[in-house]
Length: 125
Image 1 (tube, rainbow, N blue to C red):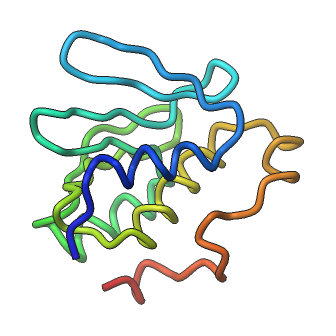
Image 2 (image 1 turned 45 degrees about the vertical axis):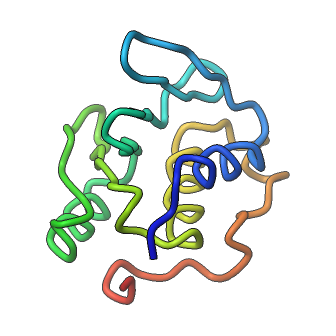
């Protein structure tokens, strides 16, 4: 079930316009100046932008994997323990975080890397 940081970076590599910035003990990721993710190598966790409802659903469903990070600007950020997710679920979460920050024209020309219909939070396992 566990994925490693390489899987996270491979997923980022499928998305256009991703910008990386280094900050002390973490890396941050954005698209056209808008942040959508963070990576902490020491803890093997990522922070991802999600809708508020998705943030709440993920944390309620699997608190051993997902943790509420913060809320800002109408979005809920969630910490993801890489050891607790599968590659397809991580790809879906990263794409959604990117999609929430990317401009509409970029989203329209970029297929979802998971290449399957979005699953509702209730169906994630």
